[in-house]
Image (cartoon, rainbow, N blue to C red; front, side, top):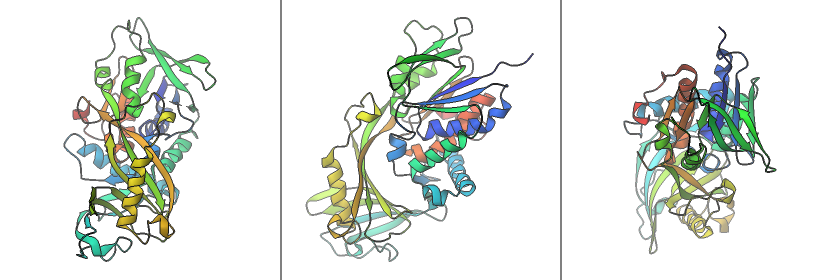
Length: 389
């Protein structure tokens, strides 16, 4: 007897949703004839939120027991994708040296490495190596996500629906499996779409979706949704500055003292000559829509100030540097476990992949791969994710 076609729906067009789409598109020919893949993104394009506004720092071995194996897989896949698709040119993939830098503008110590010539070295009181020699790297996340989306769309049966919000899901009364979803289009119209599998990868909005997609009367919902409902978000700010001259392949984790102020921005110099600077998070409540996420310009002004203090000749807007972006996004946080939730229920066809916090880009590619295995094979063979299920 011929197996029925599968119609796989992915909610969320960030790095996890899109890499899940990408790897599933590579496996689509092994699914029953007529199977389809549909990704739904409520924003105007893929990577509209954290996946488009994050720093793109990659670390091989900075992870705890729960995610160490996934991180190793993902770090390797990042390099493989860059090698296959010219990632250095297309999304700025490169290995970097990562340093811990203590900076004090009131002291003259000159303890910074000579190679870090765009930082005011005379005020570096100490520096130490945190990663390098192939253990840390970086990407610019938005073009990476956009490229993988375009590669997935080359496969027949794959579609991406932008400005389209999934608002409900229905289970088959007899089997308990996903039967269809309801979507709301940009013009406000609603329609139903056949769906046998539903992957929720909506970043910080995963919790709200897990709570609202299924009616209160739905019986037999998988227990994994309880974990999904605990995923929310924490707002973080960042700026992107075009330096007045080229920088070097370094990512810096700083501890700064300047005047009577203190800060600890992370500073990532990118391949294209821009520098990404980010700070801590706050407790502003997650809005309903990605388009309603706005930065606190006081927070981004502090980052611009810190960049100028750290690098007065290169990142100072008064000396030729240009601010390319002042932005905010919400890091997806799993309040239940503190770790990502990557799990699925083959009986109902419901899967969840979210809650990666600041490690979404590092872990995102590997997460897409293991989601593909969960959906197509019913088990994960590429990495040990048992502590995340």
